[in-house]
Image (spheres, one colour):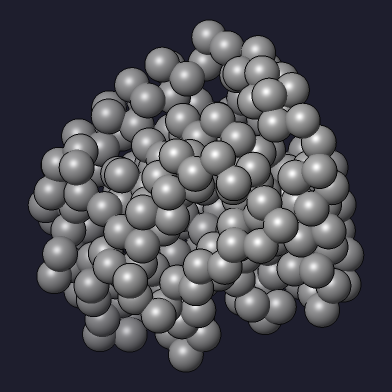
Amino acid sequence: MTQDILVHAEGGVMTLTLNRLERKNSITSDMYAALADGIARAQEDAAIRVVLIQGHETVFSAGNDIGDFLNKPPAGPDSPVFRFLRGIATFPKPLLAAVCGPAVGIGTTMLFHCDLVYAGDNAAFSMPFANLGLCPEAASSVLVPQMLGYHRAAEALMLGEPFFAEAALEVGLVNRVVPPTEANDYANAQARKLAAKPLSSLVETKRLMKKGQQQLVLQQMLDEGESFGRMLREPAAKEAFTAFMEKRKPDFSKV
């Protein structure tokens, strides 16, 4: 398992830590595989009652590692990224996140699948898919309008500009905002509270709350994945990624 994802299990809580700080916790295919494996293990292991995903107090995740993403683009529904997305979408036990600093792309969209999210007051959420010539992923085209309302969702997904911790608290994406140095510890404390409760009650409560939505979410992930893969090969995305690698502003005037 890659050292860019740290896995720690104690007291019924599995903590998955994004540990690639030198690259702002940008996520590679190997990291997605490690995350997916961790989620799968937590689902099967009766001793694991809660999962917490966290980053560093300065950064949660800069999203996909662009170089790795271009070299190893998702190849079908069994690719590591889709294994991870399906894993968090169907995970029956409590799933928490602690988010500080930038949370870009998947760094934000994964949070819509979490049950509890705690943010540092330096958190900045963004979903810049349109700016890259792409479309939403992780069923965010359904979950973001559902939580934020259509107009706020359109602003977040079409303009792709960041919104910050207090705005995320206002719309319900995060449960509480705390100082960045306290976020991971606070989320861990909440996870331990949950781990002390009857797991059957937590699982059934989550099942009932999500009843009727899971199939829609999984189907939307498939639909988004097909569009995402097609758009990745089109001129707009090629220009966006070329401009990113060349450190210049993209020119979409001819696409």
